[in-house]
Every structure is written in C-alpha cells, then in structure tokens.
Image (cartoon, rainbow, N blue to C red; front, side, top):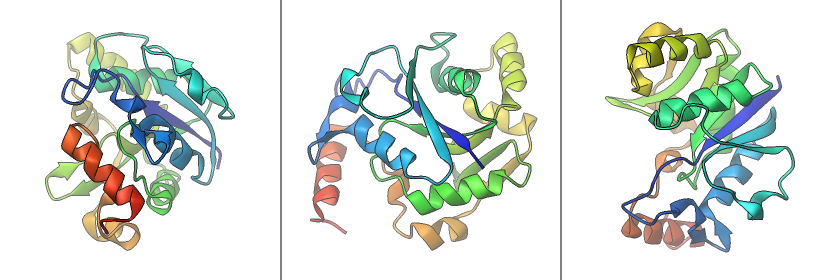
Amino acid sequence: MDIGGIVLAGGKGERLSENKELEVINRRTLIEQVISRVCLVEGVVSVVVVSDRNYPHIAHYPSIKMKRDIYPGKGPLGGVYTGLKESEYFYNLVVACDMPFLNQQLLGYLVKEAGNGYDLVVPRMGDLIEPLHAVYSRDCLHHIDNMFDEGELSVRGLFARVNVRYVEAEEIERFDPGHLSFFNVNTRAELLKAREIEQGWVS
C-alpha cells in the first residue's frame, strides 16, 4: 500500500546545536540521512518534513513537502498532527530527524503490521517505547484534537485512545539486533559516535 513519510525536525537541539539536523555525517546532513532512509521503505510515496526552518539543500528530493507546525509550541505531538494533516495518505511513517541509522526492513515491518487495521504501530523494548519511530493512521487526528482541547501534549497519551500494535523486542531483533534504529543524536559525543558507526569503525 502507498503510505506517507513524516520527518519531525522541530526540536531546538539545545544540547548539540541550534540546528542539529544540519550536522554532517559522512558528507550528508543528519536530516538527509533520515529522509533518504525513509524514502527507501517500500510504499513510501512522499515525505512531509515538519519544521519551522527551511532546508534548501533537500529540495532536490522528489515528493518532499516542507510544512510548519499548524499549532506551534505543542511539541512532538503537534508535529505528528501537522504531518498527518498535511499527508495525502491514510498511513504514515513518523520518525525524528536525529535518527541516522533507521532500518529499512524494520520500518517496512511496522508498515505491514499497520495494514492489519491498527491506528498506531510502535516499537516497545521493555519500558522503552519509540513513538517517533512508528506508523500512525490519520484516524489519530481527531483523538489528537481532543487531547489539545484537554491540554494533553504527551504523545504517549494518545496510546490509550487508539488501537495500538506494540512491536516487541524479539520482533525488532529479527531486523535490527543492535537496536541502531533507535540511536539518536542529541549531544556532541553522540554525533561523534554516529560518525564512527557510519564509517564502520564501530560495529
């Protein structure tokens, strides 16, 4: 099935730099790394990048739409809402802009599971849940509207309101035994580590 991709790039990145998504890993910016991996997932037709900033260097990617938050100041949940609202597709793969090692096969598995009628498909490893590495249906929109009305801005607050499929650790490890998919870059040390991984210096 055709789906949309949503890349959230609205964070302030205080721990690394104001525009951490523009840090370079192996000659490509972090946001380029993420977009290119999302575009490789079977079924992804177009990608919405949700950000208050402009990225002229990604304009060459086909089917990229740049959108500002419809409701600024509502954090990642606001970014998810904007992406879903702007997407032309019922199912959407939502990822953060700071995850350079997204696994195409794992993401494809999440998409496949969403096709079984779930509103949200999200990885879970013990108590750790990855809501910005998940598939959302547009049926989540009215629930998020209700959350905004109630002043609830936690993405996890959505889980109790929709039909969720948790993808557990043993499923994840079939595709990504090292859990590199969930490595994100928030600090200078993590950026250096990401550069090492990308170069193959660390397995």
